[in-house]
Image (tube, rainbow, N blue to C red):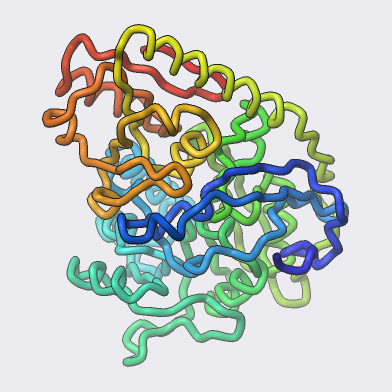
Length: 399
């Protein structure tokens, strides 16, 4: 356990957590293989809120790979189309045609490839060497680096040195144990009027729909527009635009401020509200009962079930409810997850083609944002009589 201080403002978090979650996956990435299952087990996580700046966060150490970006969303049509729309607005609104943009934490270049379709000079940094190599194989300007405070963001040959005119950060900040330092590094490598596009998962969404299964150790912090705004101000930015996208993601555009203006104070902008976790606790219990009822129903009918979505939501649901002990396997379209096992529940992760060899009678979709796309694939390619269910918000729906 790390010191119980806020990762943004440094204030003590206090002894009493908002919520304690047991039997949680220890990580959502670096998924265990068969030989690693004996070492893998569920953990207990404690969720706190900083009384000074309002940020909701776990008090644990970050996962070992917090500097790496391992994503599967780049494989979906839904996400690619969203990125194109965001890039078009960002480039047009802030006159970035022909300018230099850098993505901090670009993985294997899934989103950087889309950015390369636009009239900009696109670069990316990634900490995991294997992902850097994959990005370079695609012809992308990517090198191995992490945005630590004081770092000059440039490849060793100096071919793409800053200052950059803009930066991009997609669902990366929530993993960081020192988010302000990372953002300050980026600010120091931007031009005087440099702008940035940041996305993070939304705590507002989690609270509105009581989605306890959105919580995972990989995400140390759970931002609202208020607390994200405070963090970026501390790092030397001002917020120009903010929007909720895809129902569950905060989208903000920021601009670098002159150093004399940098910083922020709690209460600047909208006041951060105290989070009440009762809905999340009730949701966890209600979803648990709903999953137990589904298992009873399918057992009574002699039917078999699979889960679709080897995401942190699917992993948390499988490890904290009876569905993880009843399901046959988890389907996922990302090749790097297939052949491995869900953390804590140890369900095997398979490709969609596996259904043809080992068919089930029902599939539970646990992939917020992609439910309709996945349901369409099932209806088109699988048995027409298959039962399709989805976890939407805080309840089970039949499609």
